[in-house]
Length: 565
Image 1 (cartoon, one colour):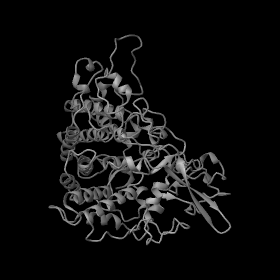
Image 2 (image 1 turned 180 degrees about the horizontal axis):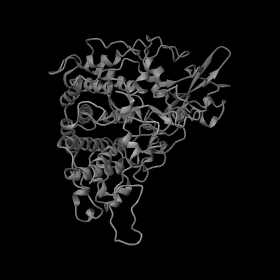
Image 3 (image 1 turned 45 degrees about the vertical axis):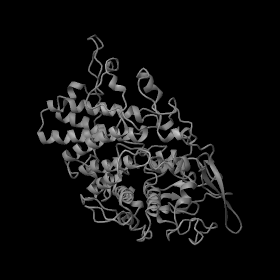
Image 4 (image 1 turned 90 degrees about the vertical axis):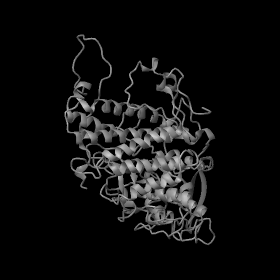
């Protein structure tokens, strides 16, 4: 699809509805910066704009949605979701260190403090639209699509509630008003985890029936399709079967992923791993947020670039992640037969390493990255040393070197943010099928096994990591799948949820936030490990986020808090 299919209506119409009435007085004037509820539900064009705007949400915290309103998850923000995992730390905190150091509290969720209120605000807005759509003058076919779109958006918000807090409050189709908390106790009753997932999955099943199979001029890229609904369902059912949730089956998760694969609409992009994240025109994207020149998000290049180039060194890859990249022969760097050389640690690594992380000696914008001391231009000895990386690394993934790094305003920041892509679906299938059937059984309705799905991802042009051979055990393939998710999906908001649903966060998130000190000598470099951020900690209660204290108080303490907070 051409870039003209980006959602212009999202960024040119800001629709707001007034939910509070007041007596007529001399101050009653028609606002010019919003539409009234009556106007929204009287005009089919304005109503559709209202629906499309539900893909984005209100800005509820400082630095969210710089230049435009936030969408689902963090996406391209200054501090990315990766920086509350073992993928990266954020150089200047931005409310991430609280989480990294295990200091989460209902009164302080750091950068994670807006998920509950924004999700339920969006759910209410979707319900409002669903309650009024039948009164509009539009074709039945158009109503069907818009209803399905609203169900998808609502389910996406529930998916965010579930994967962060666990049990959700299910609102149904009701539009709650401010005084409903005095009469309706159900407003504060959290459903079971299974009920929560079953509800969201049912909504996605209904949405898949009504959504179009493809994007088009009349249904631009960025709006949900049948594939997007089925893909989100597959993710939720994978979560449901995982150890933390334990309310679903691996067989159901494998079938759901196979339903997406069987659409035959998506494939692994062969234009190179790095290029995958720079353009919306590739066959791997299932659902993404797109940006136009008039709706910039955070300018990634300056926000994350090295200090020697005028960048701000934002989300800094950790040594924890660097050490997990295999050698090109598929062996871990801890394997004495892998050929890993501690004196030349960045040679012959998984090609995705070079597309994801900038390291000392990397080629970058026509020069070479210098994080060594003394004298390295991208080290503390370089210019603007307040931006120097605390880890010794900078982020490369998502960066477009053809965009200006300095003074980028209005001339950069047009990459898509991919919510769901085909590689994730293959990895979802591989994990679920391996757990349900083993590595080499081809499930009914599929054309390949768990191992075969994993190998499709590893065979990507420009990556071509060694194929996992037949005969691998279920445990061995489980480890291979977890490795693949670690590196293939790095910085894409999966790691935070993966280590929790696998119940290994008490291990991964309690390891120190590692970095490297590189010292230049007369004969080369020495590499000395360091702690990049002290106090990193994870407690059992952190498997779920706490519900914000403000939400508990507003329910008059009727809303049940997560355990141990």
